[in-house]
Image 1 (tube, rainbow, N blue to C red):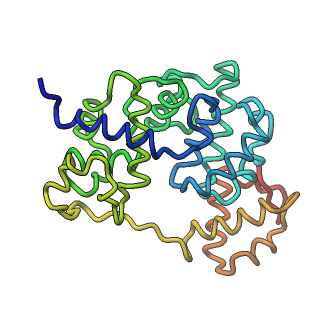
Image 2: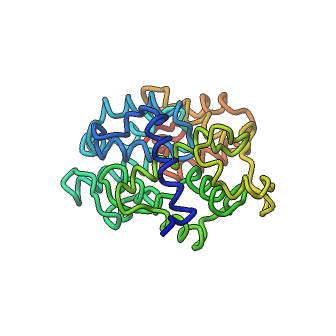
Length: 291
């Protein structure tokens, strides 16, 4: 019996990964489950190059969940630096505390146990179970979804949200043996070759099996996709205010925050949102600090 067109992707992708995989500290048998977990939080919407130094510093300071949980959450926000989306630091700190309380300080292996931790959704739970513990789960990050959309479904980009059909395709492709390697190989292929813009199809190990290529590379025709902006946004304002607090050894007077962002209405709104999110605490009539 001839293998299905989709299963024929396995060999070329896995061989390509064996030759081109980047040597990253959260991969391979030497990586602890905690290292994998920290990387999954940090890599959400953040490039590998920016994560590498912060991940190294984080693991040096907090080599276990218990080490992180023993410190105030504000220290996690401070160490997060300029990775962006700093609520991830609070969620990782909360997850570390829950791991200490519920699992004896060891990152759990079961998907349901991981899913029950603060700040962990379907993707992150599946990724940690797979990459830290070798469990068999569908792991659908942006890169995996794009590779499968092109090679199997023949479209340039996947839908904005994961669909049931997309999950079924991924599950059908998931090999019984060494599923984690297959998932990380797809991630790597999407990150290095099958990129969102200017894909390197000439370097793709499955170009002859790609449904999108066979269809003549039709352009994406789905709903408009959000384009992230930065300059002048509330995200930039929040980042500026948080940087002042992060770089200070103690509480900060409101006047220093005023100097960091001159547009008053936006500054007041963003400072209030930082307090509401638990990233900043109001410690005096006109002073603020990290939690």
